[in-house]
Picture 1 (cartoon, helix red, strand yellow):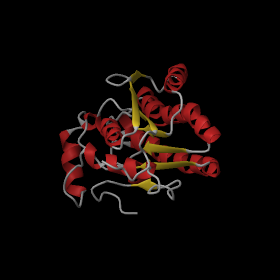
Picture 2: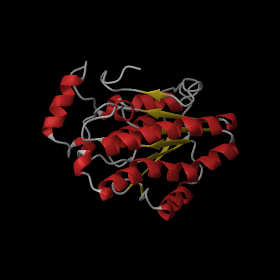
Picture 3: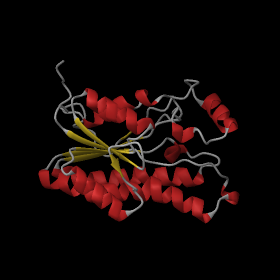
Picture 4: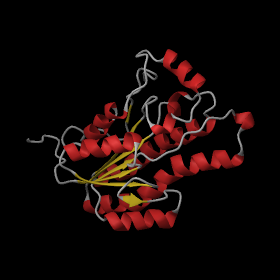
Length: 231
C-alpha cells in the first residue's frame, strides 16, 4: 500500500507509548511504515522515568536519531486545591511538564542539527479551560501549551516544527482513577455527549508529523475534544 504522508522510514519516538493515547499513536505511525520506538515506565520498548534526567539521557542515547518525537507520558489525579498536598502538586508538574522539557532537551538538539524534525506534545483541553479538582493538572497542561509555542519559535527556523494536541477526556487508563461523578458531569458538558477513544486522537499526531500535510503547523494546538473547547 502506498503512503502519501512522507513518514515511511522515519524514526518515531513515542514517550508514554506503553498505553492509552501513546500506544494508539505508536500504532498509527507503524501503519505509516515508520520505525517506531516506545518509551514508558513499563510496557514499552524502552524503560524511562521522564522525571529523572539521567534516565532521559539514557533513553535518548539508546534511540539515537529521532525524526518525530511524541510526548504523551502523563499522570492525572483529582483533588480540590484546599485539600491538595505539595507532594501531589509537585508530582503532577514533574511528570506532566518538566518531563516534556527533559525529553525535548535531549532529543530536539539532534533535530536542529539535522535541520528536520517534528515534536508533538500531548496536552489537554483542561490546560485551556481549567477544571474543578484539576488545578495541578490544568496548570501543568497550560504550561505544556506555553512551552510548545515558545519552543516552536526557537526551532522552526531550523526546520523543526513543534505543535501540541489538546484532547478532551479520552477513555484510557489515565482517567480510570477519576471519580464517576466527575466523569458523569463532564459527559453532560460535551456537545458530542461522550468521551473519545485513543484511536480517534492518533490521526491528529500523524497529520502534524506528515509531509506535506503538517508542514505549515507551527506552535499550534489541535483539539480532538468532543466539543469541550471551541477556540
